[in-house]
Image 1 (tube, rainbow, N blue to C red):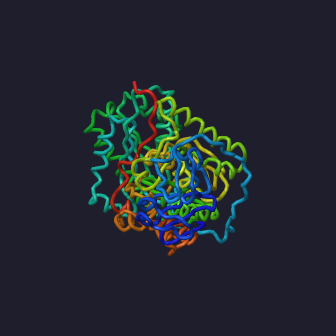
Image 2: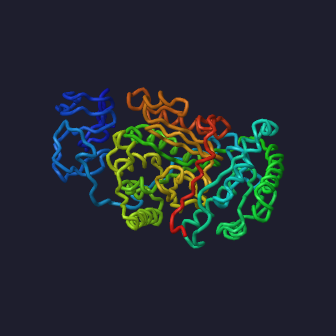
Image 3: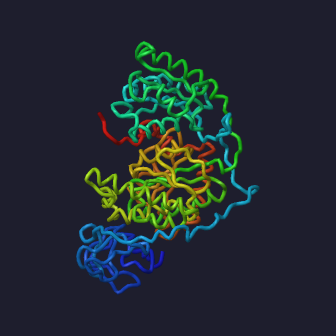
Length: 509
């Protein structure tokens, strides 16, 4: 941050706007500039510090976030009423900023208490999953879950719970449809997830995504840790529930034998997500999470950045850090795919943020993207993955997902994320079983209002009471504690049963 005061922040010396830290009344004078506010400026919003002619770029973070749609005077409020999108050249400069990560020596690396599965995979939680292949079997998997009350689960103190995950797809689609491929990929990823000690898959019996089709296409093999049922063959819903409850009880007996052991932090794969963002997200919570991600990578772990539509306009910052040109080109190819994908539906990737984003001071998707990309820290981009693909690379990677939070996080968990860090400025409340979700608040007022839902307050970055690196270390330490079993706020509330949302698109027939 270049120029800061108790009232405003200038993020880069090139910027022609400043961000209000507090509500600025009309005629407020900006510290360090001979500028007076011509209108009231809400906290989090932008005020011009120089004249900007119509068509000229608006600069924040030293980057283009849009173009003036009319002449803007110093002291004017800069927002949707006088800023518009426009095309501009991005220099992808593949790999020019790539450099080896600052790795901590193996003997000095952090550890956490994880759950080591028989095949060596490491979980941070110990659940039994009951997955529906199709919307027609969702009620049945929920009824199986309902049988495992708190009283029943008290017999299995080492198990975190039985969770039923349903969705609204699985049929009336072509098997070659990309959305159908994504659904099966996600279900396979969840079935193999190290946070599940066992999984029961329940189908109806006549759907496109029937159990045999899922097993054949994904290589899943039934056994002691993976059981399957279909309602039509089992004799109806009641008998399916009875059989399912019996199968889950057997898995619970085995799951309860699990013990936590000390393992290196390289076994952590953390999904990085932001939602309900505001103008402070890119200044506080996202850079803090980026600092924590750098520490995680330094200790041998993996951080997954995602939400392709929300790095649009900032992708050039990632291509410059690509480990090799092919990685950078794959990211750009995904950007072009999204441009074509949105055009097919009469839209474009240049869309504005949500109403809540705009109310919080974010004007364009470019502005949001520049702040969102900060979650990825500063290390090299090692690989780009398709939606829900199994992540095998260590370090910072990118997964192609929509910007819609539940869909994005579902993809990262399917890819292997065993913990999620979620930044928010407006106050998003959610969870994503079977993984714990740490919530980072971007500003102190929201944290105070939603303290029961937030795990970390990053608002001190704005008032100078905390630094980004200091807060990043605190978040990294919390990641280790959470991975070792410390419950998050969303876990205490029981969130996570309804946020399983595979990316579903294509014709429904």
